[in-house]
Image (cartoon, rainbow, N blue to C red; front, side, top):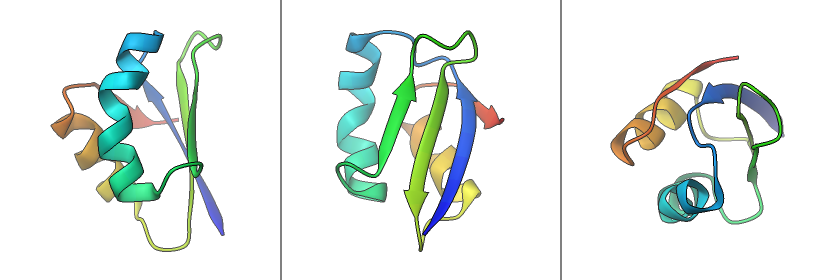
Length: 69
């Protein structure tokens, strides 16, 4: 399984709640997390099938900013 990391503006529980349905659909529940304690709000996704572009598209579609870490 590969691990992808991204800088985001997902910075609170409400933001995580808003992006959860999208990331659960794309990556699967339990295969992603956001470190809101990190100043860069690092999103880590573990997946064998998702590309970085797919994760970026999903997070942007949910209304958040994202870039490769």
